[in-house]
Image (cartoon, rainbow, N blue to C red; front, side, top):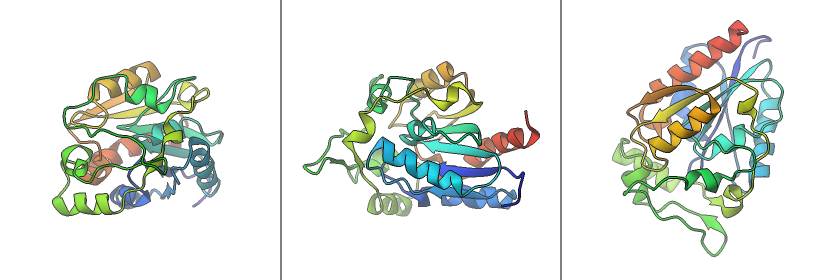
Length: 232
């Protein structure tokens, strides 16, 4: 990446991996923006933040960091001073002292949302039928099957640790509210975006817009990239 260009680092949420950003990465590349996905292990919040910070080290210049779902807590916990702004995509944004579980469960779940709990290994998996019912209902059947087959579970510890002072208190942020999200209700997303004082963009998308509406996600990220590039 050339010096003084704005890079993008994308952090996936639970039950996904870096490939969930493939369409967004392609869209950003078509705009001349280099983007990389952080391979979060989903083993603990600390591990995930360390992995994000390690990925950020590979990107020169100012960086726009993007987080989906659980990864909103991860991007909000980075210590990298080159982060120019943050983009939350249907994400969770705990405030200082809150856990991911606190904000995830602050509103009543959607009727189609699955019941979640750890297995005897302490791993939380998404039931296979939830990919079509709640996780990515706008995706094709083939995409839903692939998401289910490649899902990455997270540990219960990822969502039970209070976060420190989140970066969104000190950096500009944008929040893409997924109006048809069945995993994190839109009302909850609006609440978090509002207290963040984030620039809010609402769209009629499901919980996985990077798969089902990638151009919408690219548009929001490109706004942040242009703003970071202008130095505003």
